[in-house]
Amino acid sequence: MSEENEYRKTPTVESSDRPAEEHLPYSAQAQRDAEIEEIERRAKHQLPTIQKAPEVPPAPPRKALLIVGVLLLILLLAGGLTFLGRVSHERALAKETERETIPTVAVVHPLAEKPDEELVLPGSLLAFVESPIYARTNGYLVRWYRDIGSRVKQGELLATIDTPEVDQELNQARATQQQVLAQLEIARITAERWENLRKTDSVSAQEADQYTSGYQQAKANLTAAEANVHRLQDLESFKRVYAPFTGVLTRRNVDPGALINAGAQAPGRELFDIARIDTLRVFISVPQLYAPFVKVGARTSITLQEIPGEKFPASVARTADAIDQTTRTLRTEVDVPNPAGRLLPGSLGEVHFAVGANVNKVTVPVNAMLFRAQGAQVAVVGPDNKIELRHLSIGRDYGTSLEVLGGLSTSDQVVINPPDSLEDGQQVNLAPQPSIPPMQEQPQPGQNQNGNQSQQKGGGL
Image (tube, rainbow, N blue to C red; front, top):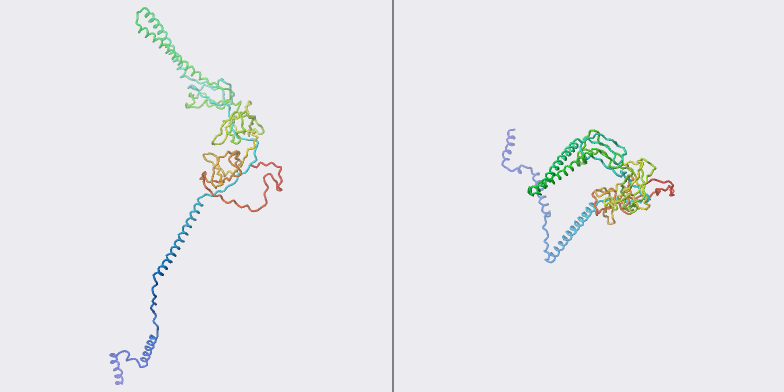
């Protein structure tokens, strides 16, 4: 056993000085050499993975220039097409933007209205003569003798004013007048004496002339004193207030004891208001289309809402003989006799003119009107799609529509709901008209369902 162990230990010590391959068995070494030979054999038959590019001969110079020119032409054409496309796109965008800036409006045509043979216009009834009565002197009201609604005659006493200051001034002026009269008498006597002495050369001519001049001055002082007395007498006479003309008192503004100040511009109010109502005036504005049919002296009639079914005869008293440029109307005055006093000043009535003329009238919606400082206007679209602002003469108001007496025709295109920014000559676009689907034809106003004329008289517009 000892020898066997010794034999096993000996190779282990010697193996440390040999390579590791010497310790492999023979079969493993042979297998490893076979693998190495196989790898070398495969490496000899494998093609190289990177091949060198074949050499291309250089192109001739003329052909190269041609190729470069073709490439440059293609680039230029591509750039030109791109530029033209961009310019075309910008122009289309500009046109679209310009088209969007132009407002689009909806239009309607005015509707024709049946002409009337009678023109009815509103107007206020005014007194033929109306005047406030002021005091001409200062003082306190003592008493008034007539109240509102009293019918008075010209020169009738209306009130009395106490004027103590004026009375004292008048007494003082009269006393001054007496003083000046006494001075005048002594100046006259002195002047006559000096004139007699001058005849005998007892005094000088200078002294005689001086006393004669003093006498003339005293006469002038007397004239001034008399004028002052007359002035105060007139002021004192104003303490009694009289009616300036025959009429009715429509207002009384003072009571006894009230302080009265003279003049219309002084602080305080007028004492009375008096009006002549036996004849009333009515001022109306006749549209321009009817102006040629309104003549001075023409017969008219007045109606009032509070007195239905009754017409009061009247006549055209005068006209302005000129058309107002703002309203395009003729200022007209109509006088109405009122002997019984049934018509009251300040009432609103209607004046009926029998013009007997077929004046063409149309109606437009209320939402087509423009109310500006120049007056009532509408915007009309012309053939070139430009706005034209027209002034109108408006007749009656039907609520949703207005009667136009002049300035429009049924062929005009009137803008509805016009913006406030519309200006004369502005370019606009027309909104497309809504298409009406085919349906049964609606009967016209005044016709029944069978299309026959109806016998009923409708109010309509």
